[in-house]
Length: 236
Ligand code: IPE
Ligand code: IPE
Ligand code: MG
View 1 (cartoon, rainbow, N blue to C red):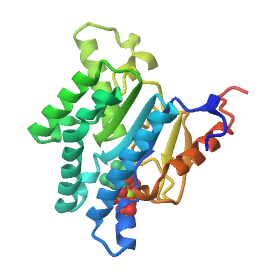
View 2 (cartoon, rainbow, N blue to C red):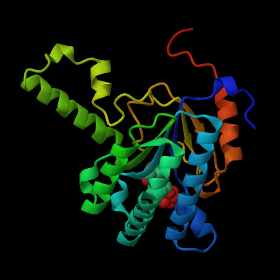
View 3 (cartoon, helix red, strand yellow):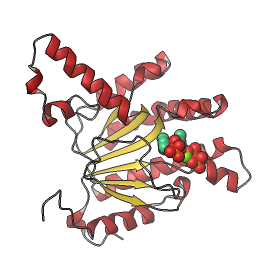
């Protein structure tokens, strides 16, 4: 149960980690863990909508995850395609979908579908769901720097116009508020290249629960913990 509905985070980021270990613990192939993880993702996204979270970001596949065995990467892409197929449901969900990350690495059919979904869901503002696919925080910052440099070379801006506001507008998350709370299950205590600019003042929550077991109850715990913290942003 959420103790204080007045102190909900506006934007929660989830690092969906621990799928592989969940499967291995059960003597199953790692890809079964990704299947269960995909179910947890749907459940948690729906739950966030019911409790009134405005922005949620799920880290699904990093720029580094291509290093994994081909069959594992294939299964993750297959599950992602499956989700894109069913996502037409956002019509009744009134959810805006944004895919953050470098889309150019994906098969044409996936990329086209991602762009179509972003376009047709852009009219909704009840909740914004971001999925980080082929996403890397460093890659995102380098791209933004490149875009700013190009604008300067084209004389659209002066180098001295580049400030935090302009720069953050050039990130994949341009226009989206920074993450208030970042949740990482699976026992690892690191950010792994997720939202590194946007997490400058995020509250971090770590739990040993593996992502496929991450339930609405676990999310309540994280939100209650968040509500008890004092965010100072450098002040007193
Ligand atoms: C997270 O689970 C899913 C992706 C990175 C795609 P993992 O597959 O990293 O699970 P563990 O960390 O091996 O348990
Ligand atoms: C982070 O998990 C990436 C995603 C959850 C998509 P990893 O399993 O890739 O992170 P590391 O390798 O443990 O840092
Ligand atoms: Mg992992």
